[in-house]
Image 1 (cartoon, helix red, strand yellow):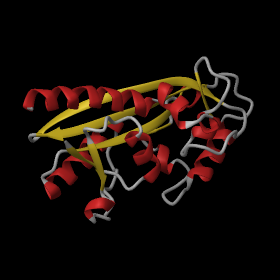
Image 2: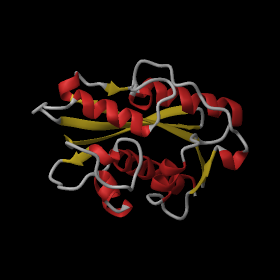
Image 3: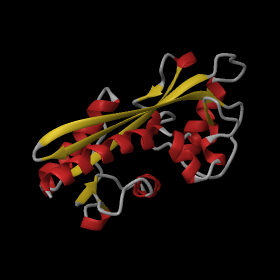
Length: 196
């Protein structure tokens, strides 16, 4: 089974490929020479994931999925949430976003947070959504050089290391995206077996 992951993010692609069985071949947008970004302008993580998958499906007609992820910090009323990628501004990079978050969380005792990932799959013209949630805390400072996004300041519940200090295999046992991808894989394998 060949499936298109509607992303240009190489880090996400590596994470997801590590979770998929060999019978599922994953392609990125670059693999099909599609370089245009889908504008993420919706009000929720779910709506953004659905929009990305729907736009790519309309263009390609392929089985495809897209994800959207947000970091929700309790002390900040759930922010940055759907705006996680652009938290420090439209042209912000990961460091800008992390620095803004740490500044807002300085001297805060409540550091509870969670990552939420929604994967939207379009298969046979129908949309299926899969959710992954990972609870944790915001670290006092950046730690680790693996991962991406907010990984260097997020410590999953029950762990001492940030995601950025973990090997990818360890991260994939705990992470929000991995939880959602595992649900996606379970669904795809059922589909694959039903049609073979």
